[in-house]
Image 1 (cartoon, rainbow, N blue to C red):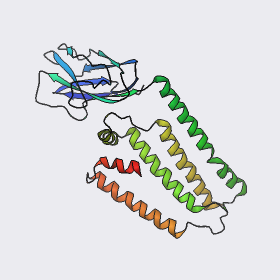
Image 2: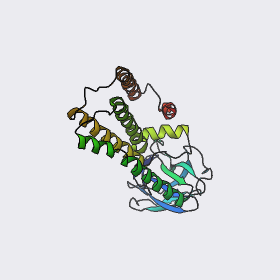
Image 3: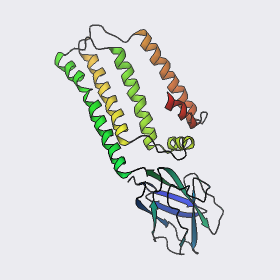
Image 4: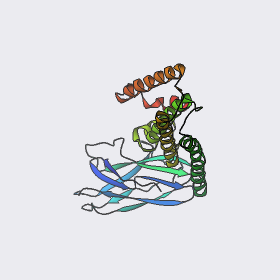
Length: 268
């Protein structure tokens, strides 16, 4: 289970989900806790909404019953049982009463991933790591051969240039999807009940490939290379691509490009 804590502000009542992000398989149960962070002079009634405004759980999980948190009980943890009903992704938010001045924000939710099968989830993770090992082993024969020969003659510098650029972009893509909440939210706008398509083995593979490519390029600087160089065509393509990345990064950082363009980048 993926675990994290999220401080949730619902109508001026500070609440805490722990964990605030979890995974459950269809037909299985898991749990999270909810509690008041600050003392309240009156009891708080909390009801749950799904995907921002729906009062029904759309059959992804068993609906959560409303709860009452007694006054002066900031240390009281109430256990919420989560039962998976069908695969997908669901965001659970809160409404609290009595209603005060504040309103729900984008951060006021519990993230739930519902896996099709616990066994299938394990198989996917196992295959992912086996794929990582198989592909990673392919990086080292060239590195070892270069070291033994003290030469990189015959190695395509164009291939290395594209390879390190590719692994750099792939790593940034995976890290953003795996850990950056804004990117995940953008993806969920496109696929409201989808599951983030990046696992930790994807992140590790991309970073490992980038490091292996960097080591090979480092060898090219010191070993015999017979005046080999990156071709003009490859250099021009890489410069254009770097300019594209630079411009789109700036536009995204100042909110001139919506993260829904993830759909385009996914296609590319």
